[in-house]
Image 1: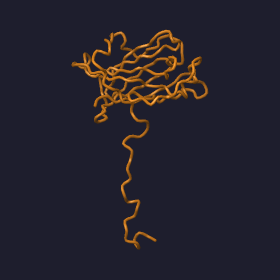
Image 2: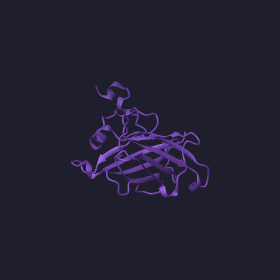
Image 3: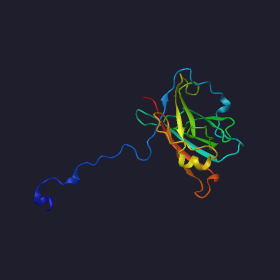
Image 4: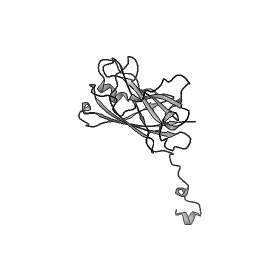
Length: 194
């Protein structure tokens, strides 16, 4: 029976709800407690965190958005820390976001702490010296999916992928699908604010 004959509204004319965002949901960083984040030495503001350290190269691109209206947060300082691949120490570096909220880092795939998923501890400092005001810090962990981490980090048993309340998973792809040692590309969007 055609719609003209039934004199009813066609079903397909109703508006179809669309998702607010496409792709992975942004990782939410929580407001850090005052005094919990240390000072950031200016020599840490650099794109290359790894230097000449051995390990699987990892190019990381982070975009910082305001949680309220999803606008880019420019001039925020993104501070990263993660375990060295050998497990002997920590790598740390920081970048200032550009006008579109992006910061990029060159590092190596983090090492695994026993019983923990492979992660990068992230702090985003909004305001402060570089922005001419008081600093507000948001923090959380960004996780490398076990599907990738399990192939790169050997020797320790795998951990389950977490479902964090703050932070979230990185979207990681290999540069060469046949050789993970050629390097990894990772991206994530994080939100800060209330």
